[in-house]
Structures are given as C-alpha cells and as structure tokens.
Amino acid sequence: MTDFLTALGLLLVIEGVVYAAFPSLVKRLAAEASQSHEQSLRIGGLVAAVIGFGIIWLLRH
Image 1 (tube, rainbow, N blue to C red):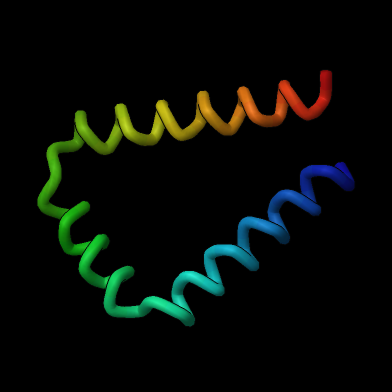
Image 2 (image 1 turned 45 degrees about the vertical axis):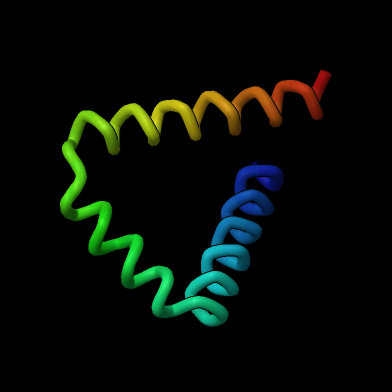
C-alpha cells in the first residue's frame, strides 16, 4: 500500500509540474485529444500502461 501511495504522490507531482510549467501545451494537447478517435486514445493508453508495467517489473526483478 505504501508503494501505491508513493506512486500516486509522484504521479500528482509530475502532473502538477507539467500543468504549472506548460499550461498552454496542456490546453493544446487536451484540444487535440478531444479531436482524436477513441480507438487511438485507447491504444495509446494501453501502450502507456504496458510500458509502465514493464518498467515496474524490471525494477522489481
């Protein structure tokens, strides 16, 4: 549970820094994402999840 909360905290820190440092980029990317096909977003999300899982697996083993 501690690892999960640490990861969640790190996610919020990184996201907060991106929003604070590059607000116009975030707005532009959100606008582009809203125009994208759902299938493209779904595939991108799955790829990101698999990469994240792979990183965690490599660090733990």
